[in-house]
Length: 540
Image (cartoon, rainbow, N blue to C red; front, top):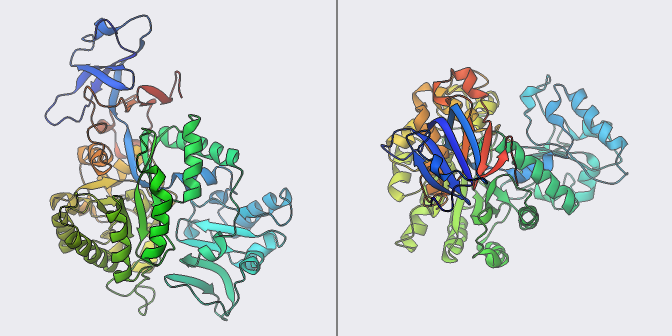
């Protein structure tokens, strides 16, 4: 070790390794892409310094592992880097003007897309725009307005291109929106979105790669070193491979190939055939984790046991028939892949556990963590205990609750909003829990998520404080627990010799920050494999 020295040496006020029982260290050395040594003495590794060693002498700084966002949508963030920034609008006229400005410099007939990270309650009118209003921005371009991953609004030009009329059959698990007079209003939800989205041409490859470069750098700037992208198409994955191939990614990416919109095992088998060449990919920056299903809708269509507060005749939407989902999930695990399934409302959680239990019955000995619940929003104590007993991990997203609490209260009422993402209960009942953002519905950021889980703060105030967890627990959900979920606990998640040198530097100790300071705290540096992907110094 002395002969070869270190490529990077960090002396800090505290190096929190997250190794159980280990006191904070004061120095950390990196050789290649791995941690070579740690020491409780800030000068204890000075013998490894050579002429080629980069030294960060930061006696006030804190070092933590780089964070994982275990349920997010980097692909959406990449698109949004070039799309119309409607998330900046505060009124529908402002929203339309942004689209109108883009239309003025876009050739007629070309698609116009918007960013996806906005909420209608952020607009003064507190609603989505309609097809007729989008027509006022442009009737010479098809317009696709996305809100999160479950809702589209399009103009009449786009409806005509898709052949959608008032007589078009509604796809199972979807909604084609209508106004009070029964006319099409441009709204498409869940499985109806594909009617239009299949027509939107992919952007130029270089433009897509540049979007991913910008988006991944923004994640890294918040302390996130690995993202688990939970809705990636086959074409999207090709773009990710191109980006990784030229070193354009500032985060590691673990991909769930989307089976969203599919309705049967035969379609899933075709998807799996296309995935087969990627089974043995070993790139540490990019790899396929498994397949993503969706069982119910999002904020306004999650499947609940009790009717909605705003409509006592409605209890959400299921996007798969349970028996069909069993066969589809079975097809995936028979091929050796893992599964993550969106289940938001408590009825969807119950049905998903039924599905997973049947798959586990068919495949005794299936490794724990093969079947993952994404969100588990309204999971109650019995459901949480059942998931833990089955070995089903859950990914929770406090930033989603923070940013959408007012919207969700309108649909579900205050009691159910307060019960969402019960981190305390999940941990106490022994489940493997990890944390993420669900961007674009929630805002990504390492400490923003930790702040939310420790305070339960939302845009409408604290919700369900009994579900809060400690700072250390929240950090673990993004680090050690996340690495376990991804099957990479031997590589990442703690700072110990032999692990990848994925770490973050903070100018002050996040654990000692006041809540409002913690929410917006950003790292000075993010390193992946010992290379700076954010902060001063050479990067990728």
